[in-house]
Image 1 (cartoon, rainbow, N blue to C red):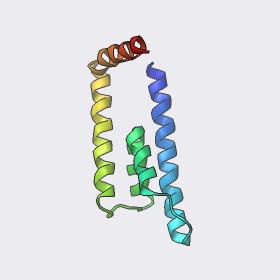
Image 2: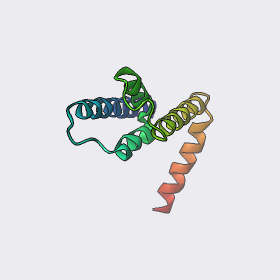
Image 3: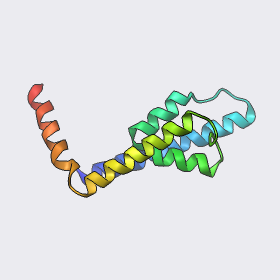
Image 4: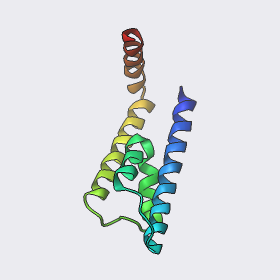
Amino acid sequence: MTEYIAYWLGAVNGIAFGLMVADKRRAEVGDRRIPESTLLLWAFLGGAFGTVLAARFVRHKTRKQPFMTWMLIWLWLDILLLVLWWLGILQPWLASALAYLRAAT
């Protein structure tokens, strides 16, 4: 399960980073932009680090509120979940939740 989480986080952060950079490039040339809801969705799905990193790297949406606030909320939530998982607190809870869902279907 650990490697799946690593693959997921790597993929989601890569996609989130790429979307932020693409949105910046589109903004510079005046093309149709990527909706903020799409960018925030990828941050929520675990790509908050990639989103924040891209925002700082290409200087995109760093002063836009409440977008930046939501990015930082998802980043801190991701960090909290990773710390709980690393400490072994999240894994037993997740296993029981998955078992419950499996039994319910």
